[in-house]
Image (cartoon, rainbow over all chains, first blue to last red; front, side, top):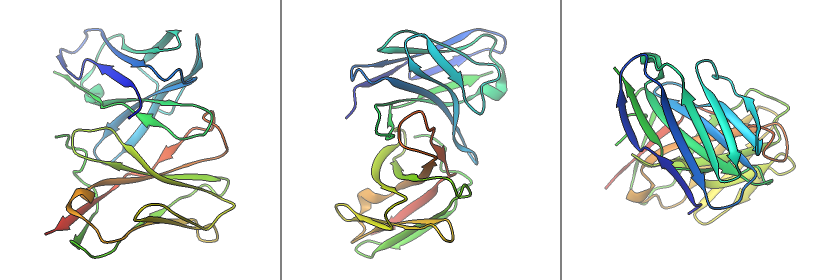
Length: 111
Length: 114
């Protein structure tokens, strides 16, 4: 299995609070991604990174920001969580082959 | 486990039978396709991929077929086992390399009857 660790795995928070999810990889892959997964929508790309300090938006980036200060870490931040951001969040990594390796997911509940 | 299987179409097969999971894609420029398997409470796991210069590729017990004319992708699983029960996603991208982002289908639940 690809060395990807997501933390926390489960979090319950209240509307309006900031939340940061962390993705840590030990594979030294260049590309890292954050997806959210919701019933009826499948996996949707939030943000991705193609190198340290190089990030770009995906299809559902509103309300989210990311940072990548080191190759191994990709952080997803919800500055002010809303109930619509209740979801399962997956981090993924990739080298140049196009294949994505996924983490185990982080389940976020915003009350 | 996660509830992402809700609202998804379900394919039910008898253990030992062959399974065929279908996927239609919309982007005629897509040239790379992947099938993923997701078990309850886990992240998606790579099964097999195919590039647009091929129409068939085989792995261990799995075969992917690509029909570019009708933009159709299928995953065939031989001798389906209980461990094959999961949600299956197809994904497509427009080029080689990770900077060609994958677009995922909504998924199909495969249920294997003992």
